[in-house]
Length: 189
Image (cartoon, rainbow, N blue to C red; front, side, top):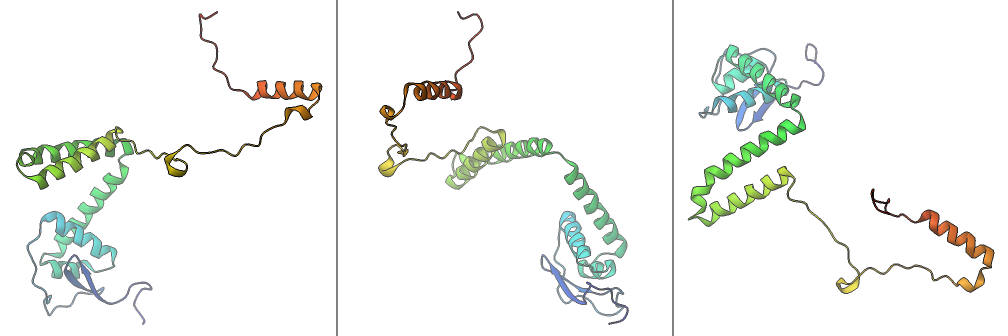
């Protein structure tokens, strides 16, 4: 089809229940078929950003959201800034942020947890998550043998009577060389 960029298809795009027609020129007539539900600014910002990533024109996004094209441009730019800042954070900053956020959630649910079992489960879940974030919760696995007993290592028994005196001395030297010992403590004699 001449005039259409490769990879950009025409048609409808639906993001979180909002439907927009993907075109590069806005139509002057017609209104979106779905009534626009009231959304928060953050929801509109994310929807506008995701639709722009699907190559939907800003005018079409504006029509679908029931806002102006200028406002769509502002929302997309704000979301790009937010995502850029999030990517710039280091892992430690994210961990600190999540610990603080988790503690706020625990504080919010703590009063309800005293009388409501489900709220107590929520608090317990957040407390466990907080412990994991702080490095206090360590998951460990232990391997055991048959019936929960110790593992049996199949070491071949050595018949030392088959070695000569010289071979036994070499063997003893090899064992000494390969044995890991603790370094002597300072001040010990």
